[in-house]
Length: 299
Image 1 (cartoon, one colour):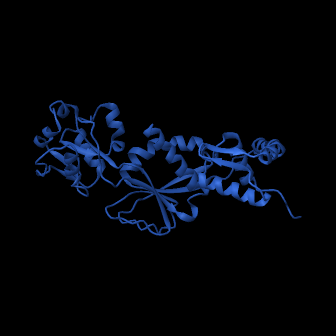
Image 2: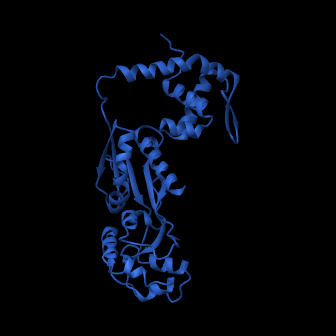
Image 3: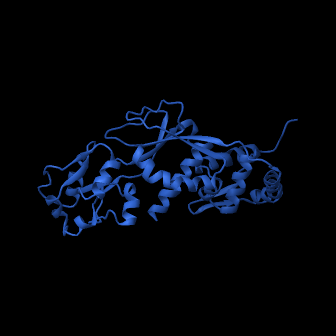
């Protein structure tokens, strides 16, 4: 039989846009990218031979033909969804999502949030992969990488990279040290702790704070941000770090920010995946969820 009907992917995208009035909001509800919704609508319009939506700067409006199509199919599509919900007697086979994340961000920012993702998507099983110092993105055991962008780094041609968070740095220290810091210049009298891979971070922040003679000798260096955080919490000195790495310590008061000023390193953490799978499958679902986290933090 030569089927004339569209795919359920196209119909769900169509109904999602009709219900929300927006490609973006439909994508958020369906846990896919806006590009995936747009392509599904384009395929449906090609199949039917006429446009279904009028595009405007404020959003999209269904045409008269779209309203007719919605009336004809909505009840049937909802009935199919309800039937599978009711008839599914055993859990579906869980889909694996293999994630490689730089260690400190993974432990301190991602892991505390993964429970939320699992609650939203119980059919996706996350498998964490060990991070490599010189990642070349050729591994076949990883679907999504969360990597820090290094100076002058260019992402491989077959990889799409989207900024996540972590460009901004700020000083943090134990409360007893913060009590004697009256102005940014006071930091020059303290032991300045630093990450050995990024010793220029202190110069960057002090320059942003308009502190002169900021090329003083630094204090102790650490090759892991996790150790740098412990050192600052124990009162060894003042560290300059991304706030996202010390959320717990800032919440408990173990660390404080003596000054609210932040400075951009121009680097930050990026979510990377293969271009071929960036808009589809479990990788797209995970990346869309990560974007909701950073949007919430920005609001």
